[in-house]
Image (cartoon, rainbow, N blue to C red; front, top):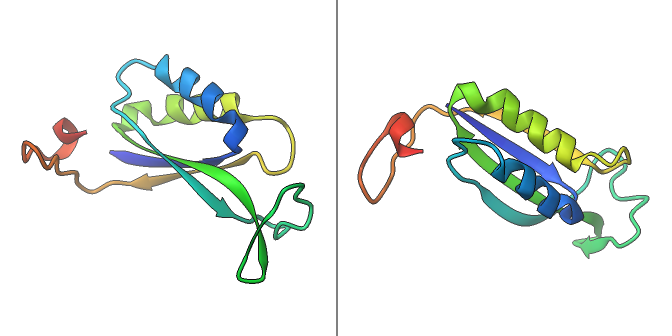
Length: 113
């Protein structure tokens, strides 16, 4: 199992969700509104968030745990749907997931996702 974490532009969320919804067997996802900065440290932002003396960009974070067989299709889907070709499009990270526990049923592993 893998966790895919994607940081994208907030205005691309609907397009990304529509594209992910078209994938078969996607178990689910979590969406969070976050702030952060990249290499530019927010220097060129049009609408920065100022916090603790720093400028941050508004971003949307997607977190998805999938079986290994879905990793490449999920990555490709997110990348294609969120790409504008401009600075700040975001990043996609992939992590190994050792185990999952579904709290309601106590199922573990692949059946828990």
